Length: 259
Image 1: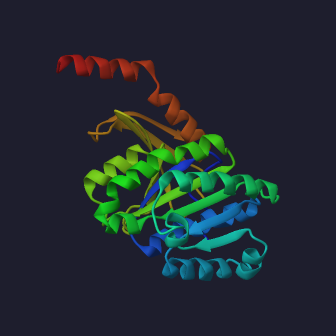
Image 2: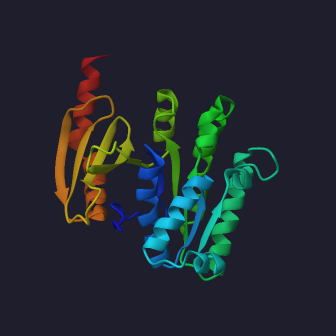
Image 3: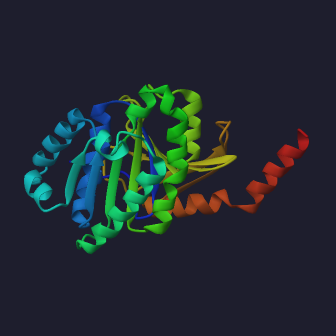
């Protein structure tokens, strides 16, 4: 079983655009295994087909799935149960429920709440496009009020309209890029407009090396590049690079040339 390419921590609110249920499973199973190892409660809102895939892969990794479900460390629910508890999608009410769940998770003896929620239903229904942006802009309150929370919001890459995808990316501090199966690489984006940092690694091995680059959101030109031995160091270095005064100064000079 592949280890997680990126080790996220409590407080991280991550966006994932996935290519297929196969690649989604490759990302979520190591993510769950890490959560179980850290004594976190793993709470997942997934399609039944994805739940079946995850359970099979966990069993292959020698996890007693039914035991973990029985002791409350692993929970699967549908989007109707979470996002439409009273038949309506109300972002504020759901945020309050999440906050209560984080508090109860700690009271129950877990070290934190690890989540991943599929929002394909919102992409498939244009009537919810504006509401889902509202949700993504509201939910960060859970992460500031409940530091023991870690969550991935997942969307189908090919079905998400480009304009909506841009808004969703901007609503998250970090985003996992799931490339097509021809690529052995995967990366995390850190977005601080007008710049973006990409932390890149091999998705199939336990890497001892991560590369990171800084570029403008609207350009492929690399403005800064570095390497790090692990994800946390790469993330910290990339964030510092994003705040480099010379980078900001060059951006100000660039803007003044076009004003």
